[in-house]
Amino acid sequence: MTTESRVKKNFCFLLYNIDPGGLEVYLLRFFRHYQGQFRATLICKSGKTGALLKGYEDAAVEVITVRTGYMNPVSLWKIYRLLRNRKFDGICDLTSNFGGLYMWLARKASIRSRVAYYGQSTNHFRSSALKSSFDRMVNRLVYRNATAIVLNSHTATDNFFPYRVAGDPRFKVVYNGVDAAMFSDEKDDEMKQALGIPVSSFVIGHTGRFDEKKNHQAVLDLAVRACATWDDCYVICCGKGTEQLQESINRRQLDGRVLALGYRDDVHRILRTFDVFYFPSYTEGQPNSLIEAMMAGLPFVASDIVPIRDTVPEHLHGQLVGPDDVGSAFHLIQRMKEDRQLRIRLSCRDWAIEAYNANDRFREFLESVAGDQIV
Image 1 (tube, rainbow, N blue to C red):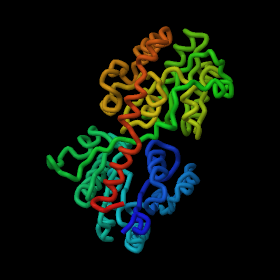
Image 2 (cartoon, rainbow, N blue to C red):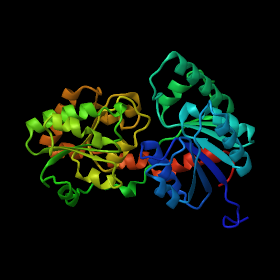
Image 3 (cartoon, one colour):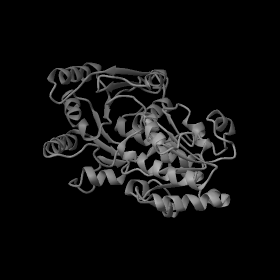
Image 4 (cartoon, one colour):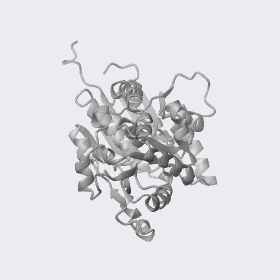
């Protein structure tokens, strides 16, 4: 049977929604990479879609909304019937432990390949006795019903499944794939001018949604010190919800020197206005933002946490500091500001392009979703 005549495989994916975030952008890029090679259905479990809806639809993904809940038997029955009637060849739930019940439903619906995907290294909720008990239950549902458990870091494997049997072939670490063609190390003076920043300015940048875990407080604390020290310094925060930083920016009298851009669909150009990338997260899975910055040739200062140590080349671990150690971050950035050649030497663009090659990494993910089936 030729490739053209082979019936396309039919895969189902589950997310909470498709508002901009690392996981949502990653999955959209995956669909674009393989557009037309298999049929894709995405179920948004929050009952809502999000700002990336058009991108998913343009990538030929059928988006379905179902407001689900573990205490909502009607929605669970609806999901089960959908899984059974659509006769999917594989299912991938990308909501970490919360995919446990859906792995069980997929098994009941006789779906052959059942993949639980973990795009974070730790849970993102405040722990309590009740929440921890529930989390253990759904984690066990994943373990018992998934045919593959895919994580994007070894840290996540150890944190979520410390009890796993050594050598269990279902566990696989698949690193994020990023299309390097989207990112350039050429500076974009036109974008600087559009943002109202002098072309000759020194820009410290951060990309990532507004979230406590992203530690924008440290970015603003650094901005206070940097802008007081250097008249030509500007700081940019780009990501969904970052416009909420404006009140804090005004309170620190940084208006005009710190830009909170909110969500942008041209992050690849925004990165080209940066001279240094600052990324002080408290926790991460495998951060797309940092990978993209490296592909854009930017030197960085980032958090000294295990997921980030696993993401960057070992010879640049000296660029990692504690998430709240703004003083050390400032001194590293000061050295880079004063020495352009140092900034060039600290770039790891070529390394990042090879490590996170989209063809290889997306293929690994697709093979996990397909199981032993040919796509």
